[in-house]
Image 1 (spheres, rainbow, N blue to C red):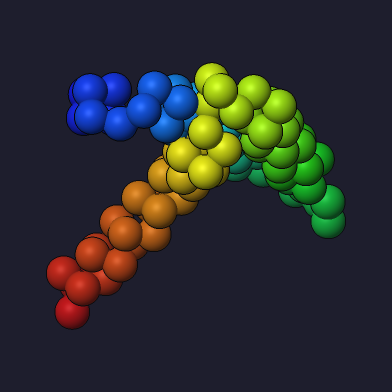
Image 2 (image 1 turned 45 degrees about the vertical axis):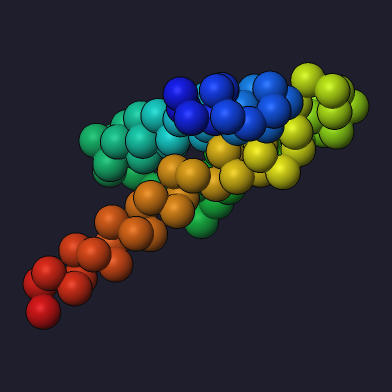
Length: 101
């Protein structure tokens, strides 16, 4: 984060930080939602569909905000920030599988 704010344009840093912050909040919400579902023991055909729809709507709203305010937030840096948690989970799964073999 320090490198982003010191070496890059402010819009890149703020876009990345906004995307990363929203990504972390959505991850925490997703984690608590599925933990609650597991504790209840009840699932249905559409369990989680509303949550995923809301998450994607929030991600779209953040990207629209970045598109409307290009002087403040860079949309591509924000998109990278939104995907950073997903990339880290995939990387962790790939490294974990490699260690198991």
